Amino acid sequence: MDILLAQPRGFCAGVVRAVGIVEQALALHGAPVYVFHEIVHNRHVVDDLKSRGVVFVDDLDAVPPGAVTVFSAHGVSDAVVSQARARRLRVVDATCPLVAKVHLQAQRYARLGCDVIVVGHRGHEEVEGTIGSVRGPVHLVSGVDDVAALEVGDPSRVAYVTQTTLSLDDTRAIIQALQARFPAIQGPGVDDICYATQNRQNAVRDMLPQVDLVLVVGARNSSNSNRLRELASERGVPAYLVEDARDIDPAWLAGVRSLGLTSGASAPEVLVTQVCERLRALGAQSIRQLPGLEERVSFRLPPMPAPRRDDRAFHEAVSRGASTAERPAVAANAAR
Image (tube, rainbow, N blue to C red; front, side):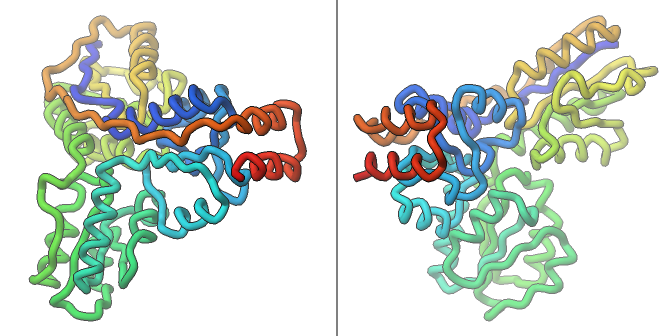
């Protein structure tokens, strides 16, 4: 059995930036650093950061006033920003710049008086953040059937934006349905589609004629990882999503001569390496990276809040197991 590695795969620039922000916050302020939601959708990345003193929360009420808090790469709603401000949290925004661009587009359409349609998956953090950033009529569309049910104020004043982890291919049918129903609809150009999502799907598509099976390394709650698996399956190539090497079922490999391997945009390369080692142990004879696009995109880190002398008191309170009632008091004193 031969292993063919898709190129590109793995971390995108937005994920590199988000993880780098948390690591820089730890280096500058020390533990604990709080993160609102998973910084990226990957259990291994999250567990590694937890082991180094990062605390992940789904409610800002769980964060002591004045604490250093990172917003995840998926972005947040205006309500979350306001709540963080009210609690005097020292926020570092790790929202992917491409997600932030979608927020700005949606807000611009709303200011023009348009009903804004967000194309994306219901319940996904990015979608909730985008919807929550729009001040005006906003609608969620997850499939073609949703388009027919839309009720808008003025059919001539409608615009759409898309979840970044959906590619042009993923949204084509929905956008065509929107354009058919609302001929005057406005929307982003092709260049605004997330480069990483499209590139990884293109790499898998190019790889499919050469393989009998596809493995996608990624988290089960990762939208773009699931889409890579679906893309292969839709084109008749068996495909499985694995979080790490332990998920591989040797029965999948029976009769497989060539296996394609890729990873989602939030999966670290070390997991791909471990999967390769497991496949070697199961009989893989060669591993070869396919030619593909070399991504050169990078995003700068945002400025960090300056460390304060009283940060140490807060960290010491956590270290000695201070009560939840005491920790906010210590942090509040630091925030003054």
